[in-house]
Structure formats: C-alpha cells, structure tokens
Length: 92
Image (cartoon, rainbow, N blue to C red):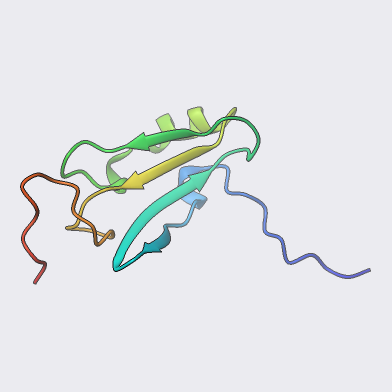
C-alpha cells in the first residue's frame, strides 16, 4: 500500500503554520485551521495588529466546529501589502 503525502489539517493555532499567497508583487500571510467542510470564518486583525495577537484559546474554540482563516493585513510584519490609508511607508 502506498503512503499518503496528505498532511492532516491543523486543528490548533499553535500547529497552524503561517502560509503565504503571492498576488502580483504582494504577499499575504495567513493561517488556515479547523475542519475543511462548511463555511469558513475569516478573522481580520485591527489596524496595525499581527497574527500573533490572536488569543490561541479563542481561535482554538472557534476552530473546533468550523474552518478558520486568519489574515495578516500589516506591511510591518509578514505580509508585504499595506492595507492602511494613507499608504504605509516603504519598508527599510
């Protein structure tokens, strides 16, 4: 029997890796956890916050019954796109 290369989905905030998606020249970082079925719940941070500011106990409780996709919308951390108005200064 062949082994499967499919990894189980993360079920906790601590085991969900940061993932990246590139759109044009911009990179968006997110975490995806919980069951894959059903309607996902998208978590957005407040302006200037990062993914690391979510309380793992809160996210884990939400992820028990639904898929969670948490977005990092800040340019100052992992994502390269700034979603602020006026635009963020160039990193560096």
